[in-house]
Length: 195
Image (cartoon, rainbow, N blue to C red):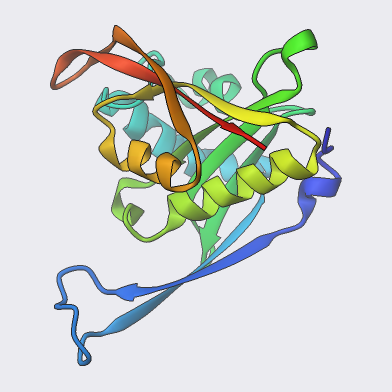
């Protein structure tokens, strides 16, 4: 598997798009997003935590306890080898984060998994795509045979669309496995991509 020292390089991704709210025309303003993805450092945790807290407390995408403190939340996100946590940064600002590693220990360690969180104010700018691409490259180069997401909330249409676009398929949906803050009991997709 890929070790953290080999994964310490950065990935730069650029995306050209029309600014939100602008018409798609020749005269529309074009913005450029340059995302640097690098291994998360200890001093990144407070910025990641803000995104983590807002995402988890919204109750729409993660089955994690709400209201966790900075210290309580850290073990849920900051990984140790052979797993890895990365941040997506633009001009020194943490836009999102991903964590990746073996889906299961021992005899299941040949299949990778990953989790993602993007600052709500940065969604729709390609940050999730950049993080998803990074994790897939990390897993392939680390010798994993596949990647599996164990719990993609079925009502999280943006995530389902992104993972499908990046080559994942829905293997099954566990009915009423997630208590959504708005929709009540909804299903969790198990999504999979073989390399």
